[in-house]
Length: 295
Image 1 (cartoon, rainbow, N blue to C red):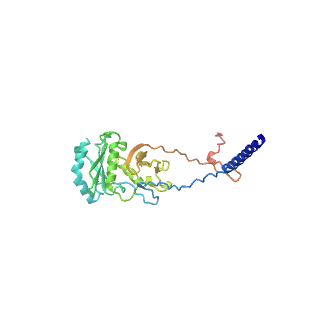
Image 2: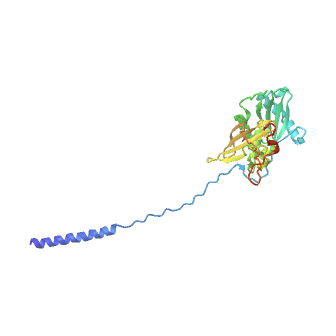
């Protein structure tokens, strides 16, 4: 009886072992990792508010005397004279003191404005100066940019003054430009309105035509945040070249401007002694020692 009962138990154990083996064989499988799906990323192209075309004709900032101005522009200045006087007086520029002269600042970047620079000098170094902008079509207001009063800045120096930057941004917005403007022309116009006198060779296309070939070339830099940094050198015949940095936001609004003396690269032209066919230096007779003095 005992042997008969042991056989069924043995058979049941064998069956269980067989079933478990089959299940284990079905559970162990080779899993192939899923291939990652490729996703095409479209780069974000941020619009730049300035023209970057190298082929674009670059026009310099020029200056005109009153006699060189068109009659239409002179009439516009005459109509705005009372407003200029009032706002210059409000800035403490003593405009009613007389002896003021002005010249027109011709900026191709601002065709819809008549830009002027007023100066007064009584024969001393105490020069007073300010700039004024007059909208041609009346869509805007007359604006004053103080530069100097009797040789001193009324606030902080005009090139870095927040009031100057604000006035400049308003002038640009009043232009209602339909197409991006040439960035270097805008920068040179800012330099002129703040007392500078930039010359046309500064924007020469070739290095050989530059007036200051050892100075930093004009550069437009686009940052990762979308801001635009403008670097250029302003020079004049009677002054040391000045290095400018202007920071604009992605919409073309001027945020900051700095100005300092330019660091020019010093150079010295060396004239090596000529050599003959044997490789020996040829000494000119003027460099040979005098037999009498041996010098």
